[in-house]
Amino acid sequence: MKRYRRELSKRLREVPLIVQILAGFLTGRAPIIVYTMGKVGTATYRRSLAAQGLRTFTEHNIGAQRRRQRLEEGDILYVDIPFTRKITSYLLNVLYLSPGRRCFIITGVREPVAQVVSRFFHSSAKRSSRKAIGFDHLQETFGRHLDRLFQMDWFDTEFNPITGIDVFNHPFDRERGWTVIRRGQIGCLILKLESSQEAKEAAIRSFLSLDEFTLDSTNVTAEKTGGAVYLRFKNQLNLSSDLLDTVYDSKYARHFYTDAEIERFKARWLDGA
Image (tube, rainbow, N blue to C red; front, side, top):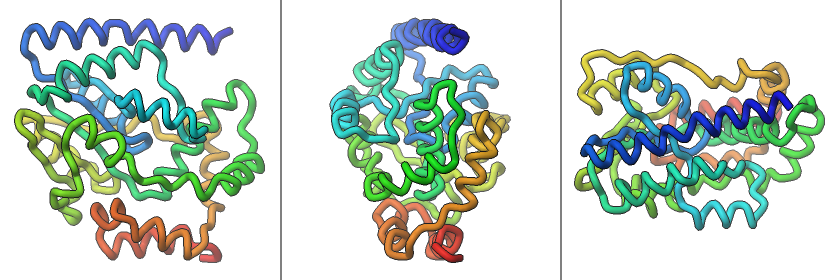
């Protein structure tokens, strides 16, 4: 019962977001939309911006057609969003993103294996409800779905159709760890999670023309309930060189990460390393 009360409370807190989107549209205020794939620092960016009094909205899946497809495919990393979140997604899309009205988008990237492992654990925890998350069950489920987990197409199937921005047609500063892309009145900041906190803070200050800005880490998977199981699972995970070659030779990995970073990631996850 306590879990359901928490969920109801969360849904009720989202209702004012709908009002804020409509009020902002009527007054001409440009929103900040943290529009990212999951587990790339979304909550940290949102809460840090909100702490500065900045009106901020977070989205992972705005495209309704893509949501339906993922549900039909039985994507084990996908957790469907509540109806109130679908309303905010719809409003942000039709009022700002599709017509190309002035708004600020912050999106993030993360090295593929760490991102998938974190999302997998998060999705498993959501589905486990009040039951403890079993280590053996995690390993078995991850191994069984391994060939379906690494689908690094979020920018192609979700972000590009909604925003009209093909991030792969724009150079990314892999050394600095962030880049700004502009399409008409839409500004988009891409942040690499592995960049230093100082670099990410400087990027957001520059992008939003802020005098001061600091990041407050939050929603760290390892610090949540079940964090010990997550750390054990992550630390004992080993993947084949063939899989790692496929993952890190992908368009996504090569666009956002240097050769040196990729070799370091491979060594971290290689079976027998």
